[in-house]
Each structure stands twice: as C-alpha cells, then as structure tokens.
Length: 199
Image (cartoon, rainbow, N blue to C red; front, side):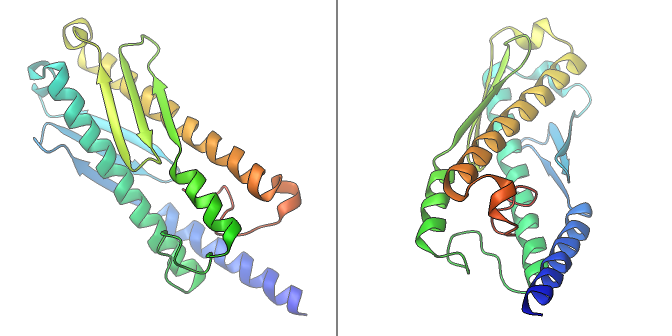
C-alpha cells in the first residue's frame, strides 16, 4: 500500500512538472538591445537581430552580447525549472543542495556537475561556445565572420553551436548520473536526478 501511494505521488509529481515545463518560455534581450532570444521547453531556442544590427557588430562586441544573452536565457530557464519542480514536489526546490537532497552522495554528485565545462562549435568553425554548468557562457566569433556570413547564415551557425554545447553538457550529466547512481534502468525514478527534469 505504501509503495502504491509512493508510485501515485511520483506519477502525480511528474505530471505536474510536465505541465509546468510545457508552459515555460524565457525571453531575453542583449544588453545593447540588438539581439533577442527565446528559449522554450523542451529546449527550443530561437534568436533574432533587430533590423540592421547584425552588420553593425564587430566580432568582439558580438561575442560579449551573445554571451550575455546565453547566460540570461539559461538563468531564466533554471529559475523556471526550479519553480516548476517546487510546484510538482510541493516544497521549495532551491537547486543549491540545501533542499531534501543533502545526503553525501548527492552533494558529491552536485559538486561534480558544478565542475562541468561544455563546449560546441559551428560547422564552419567560425563560432564556438563554452559554458560552465550552463550558468556562465563565453562565445568566440572568428574575426571576419560578420563580413563573410549573412545574418541568417550566422543565426543558423549560432543555433547549431548552442544545441551542440547543451548536448555536450547533458551528455556529461548523464555520464555522472551513471557513475554516481547507476544506469537508468537500475536506479529507479528520482525527481532530483532523473534526466528528464534535471539541469
């Protein structure tokens, strides 16, 4: 009976979380207002430049603006995720290790995740991104890129870089979960470490 109740509570939490995440949309703009980006669940990203702004950028300025956009997007997404998780669990989900997951194994896992550095590169090699735990981003744009690529070509390169970087991060998270908790088929469901809802 206890097991049935726990299974029901788990399924309810997953359902609530899924509903909340489906509604999650984060919109940000670059500090200079020239770039806008939208991130929606599950990890659907779009980015646009205000008319005429792309060609006015130098690559070093573009790097700074894109890094700020990426950092703001993922900060907002994480906040939204934690709010959705709090709703699903019926208790605050602070995401800082001070919640109900303060056992030693969980703390070591969180420390390992916090040390992840992920990266991605565009097909042309002109754009590269690096992030630490998706919280802080650095973007490199090869000199001459703005002149060599039109806005849509660059936008597609950038979206590819973002996806590759996030995929690299998530792959490393999955490896750590396997290392600390075992393969998914053997560890059972835990909303704090299940790959579907953990960032």
